[in-house]
Length: 159
Image (cartoon, rainbow, N blue to C red):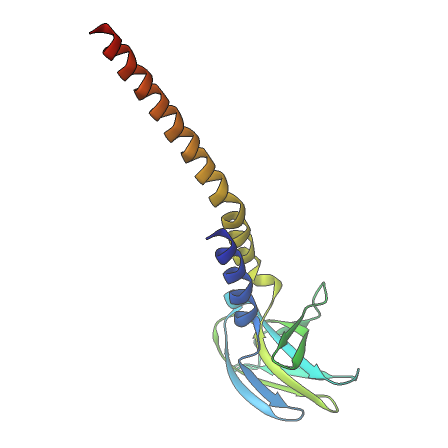
């Protein structure tokens, strides 16, 4: 169960981070973004290229930030390798327009990969915790059985 929980946490994190909305260079897409979901812009390209992205909300005065991730985050879905370009900072949940430009690049809006680390940590706890709990239960059962047998022998010898 620990191995299944660990593997499930990894696959779940990858699937949740993968871009759910994809678009070509120069296109504008409307997506629902929530700051709690840690939205991100991903790119798939055969070669390095310069890219520019913009995110706009319904209210032009909203402060929306695009920051580069602190660590390189890549994931492969099928034959497509995605690299996270920007972490999107939105002030509130809502509908936003996203557009990006880059020659020969396919873009996608998903979530931060590292943002799902709590599932991996939970999987590691299952991977390590379940065997330890099983061992402790086995020790307790062994002690109880030995104590009951010893008591039964003593009672039997008294008669």
